Length: 159
Ligand SMILES: Nc1ccn([C@@H]2O[C@H](COP(=O)(O)O)[C@@H](O)[C@H]2O)c(=O)n1
Ligand SMILES: C[C@@]1(CO)OP(=O)(O)OP(=O)(O)OC[C@H]1O
Image (cartoon, rainbow, N blue to C red; front, top):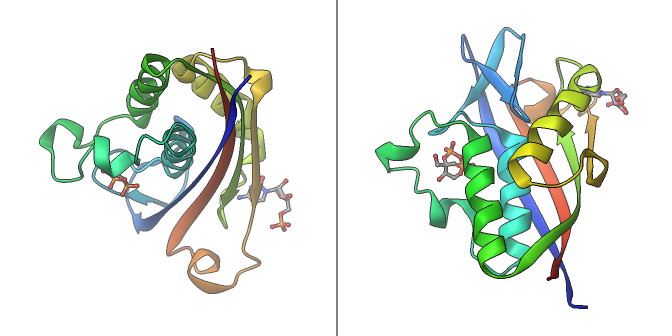
């Protein structure tokens, strides 16, 4: 069986009075992530990990940030499209492990809902989706809440 690994990274700026959507969950916070889409940093890192594993370029290659079709779009839809691209290449997703670097708010209470959202969009079990979070101990741009970061790795296999 051919197994491949993928890695993804994303960063988004935080701005006041913006929605803060992470893993398809709308977090209550005084700041939110800014981007062309809904700026879901977790889903973007996961999309890039999946695309990378299948050697299918990256999220910006498939969904250009100048294309009006993707303006404000839910990244759950982008993840669904990425899962379709992998299926067309006869890959199934094994597991995903992701790390969020977000100073605030607390992510832990929202992880089960994020797992549900990602499982539905990617077509895999919640048990195959791990999400973790850390602060940046008040240091740097993450610590000052100027931005947020996510990393993800995944395994995929040929069907
Ligand atoms: N936005 C966050 C950040 C962290 N967590 C959880 O808190 C633990 C401690 O975080 P430190 O950065 O102080 O090490 C971390 O391991 C997470 O479980 C969180 O839920 N949301
Ligand atoms: C998702 C896309 C497309 O709407 O826009 P953004 O929300 O700005 O996100 P980014 O992580 O910069 O990635 C790729 C983009 O093309």
